[in-house]
Amino acid sequence: MKTIINTKNAPAPIGPYSQAVIANGFLFVSGQVAINPENGEINLGSIIEETHQVMRNVKAVLLEAGYAFEHVIKTTIFLSDMELFASVNEVYGAYFDGAYPARETVAVKGLPKGVNVEISVTAFKG
Image 1 (cartoon, rainbow, N blue to C red):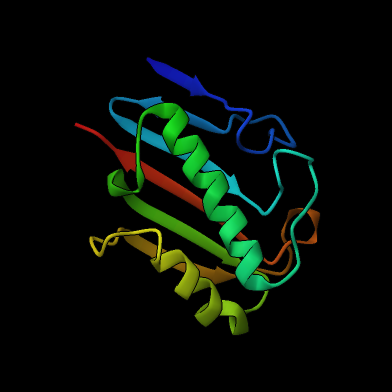
Image 2 (cartoon, rainbow, N blue to C red):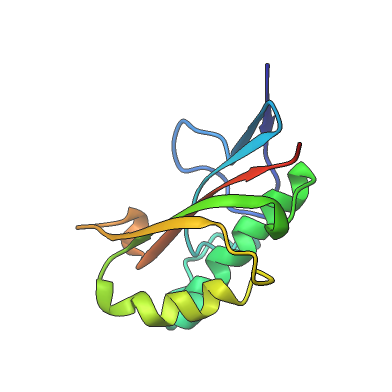
């Protein structure tokens, strides 16, 4: 059995998918980009601002599902350019207490809406 998670505190999906799905204690959060859920605008001011918006969106979905960053066990970061890695990594790391999840970071040819970073997470509460 699965439970679909949606919140108005994160951007609405821009395709046929859910913000997140819970199955057997696992929470699978779809990739989040820097769309401000309050006005639907993309926040591309700087890579620092963009990454904070992405992480706020991830947090909103986690909270709606009753999870927190401490429950995140795996993340995937997609970057438009690996030159952004250090800045994204700095912001990303600040959202965890040191018990970091497993992760991969990859550079891709393009991301939705022309953003520079997209992050998806998997969390678990047993």
